[in-house]
Image 1 (cartoon, rainbow, N blue to C red):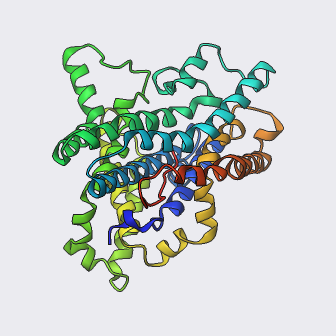
Image 2: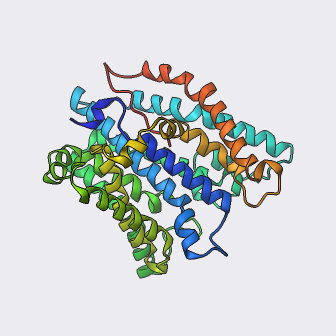
Length: 358
């Protein structure tokens, strides 16, 4: 059975919960300076948390688009963009409004020049500040939501695969061309520019395109709960991901990220297509599922409280975690959840209600 047609895809909320935990820990602790290798290996993986979100987003969005195209013969871009706007914009606008008021009152420092980047989802193309710096990833997601459906709507699958492969190697290609010509195609200070960081999303897209083949593959038939190597292979993959995310390869970091994101995508595939075993049971437990459902609001609001550079009471443990979770719950129950039914009205026929948090 294609998991895209199942309404709720197993394990993904749990994976989102693990991802937001990585972000909380990484932001709350601060930079890697002064920490031992083992400490960083165990706790400092905020960037990896974002990568997991990206892989999941690429997989879900591509799966929904392909399913709609297969069922109706085309894709309603207008309905897609409307559903995305209802999913992302309300909570984002409330967050941005609160930050704007706090900046006027002097509680946070947001340079005036940054607001044009905030409201146009281009924060990843400028040098930002802490309190809104995390919006770089939301900007990348919005660029993906805008452009990728056009490719899936009008191009052949092979062309979409080619586009995704180019996106996976985009950072390496841009750096290689810049080095060969002596002219930087993208300002080196803009490390979150969209062409440089699309790899995890593109791998999620490729995973969705390959889903039918994966489900029929020999590997899936062999990966059963009764085979001990399934769990060992998963543990080894997770250990490799954490190790690669911690090691610094200098000029080889772009290639390192491609390998890391590739292994990460395999781990996501393992839990999506084979949601069994102890790890899958934990990922699908109600506490992790609930945290995963809160992940978008948690990601939006945590930046105000998980600020290692602030001495404010609400930025100190445990008050920072408490405030971030309370604000996220308010955002989810008062803004996100009431709009679930409204988004459902803008679907064709009985399309599944699987959605992805940015």
